[in-house]
Length: 189
Image: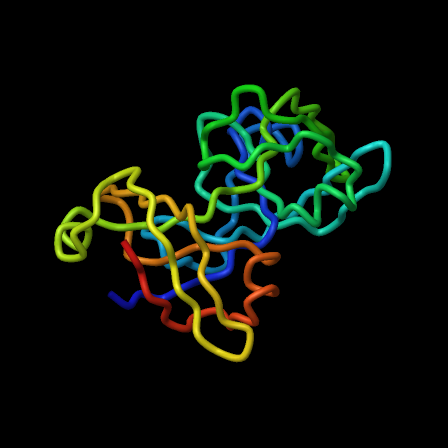
């Protein structure tokens, strides 16, 4: 069962109330690049992640706006930012997560929670999930080939009509495996 694997680097998803504060009231995010997941896009706008230890500049925003703002970073980013206790979670599972300040030249927002290390995952539409014999929230492993190949366990399958088939891993995982974005990987049940 082969499927394309893509790299998910640090980024933010913003609620409209935070877009209003960071960019101006009524501002609409500006799409610059469509992503593999239908309706998702990289925005022209950028934010800074601010902690007492450092400011991480030029962090991408993924649109469209969401009901609640969140920031997805790698474990290495948590060390650089001096953040402790950042949980590994599925996107949108923010209760009890860590907070940061998001800043632009026009404003800043203090998130009390919303920072996660994204759980590696597989996006699947229902038809593809059925063809692969996979179910929503099923845990599988993903096999990577190459000079530094290996297997990543505990990869959650997420099934939705709005998804297109793709594995998403973060930069730490890709670097450890020597994985090049866009190469196929194998799903192991």
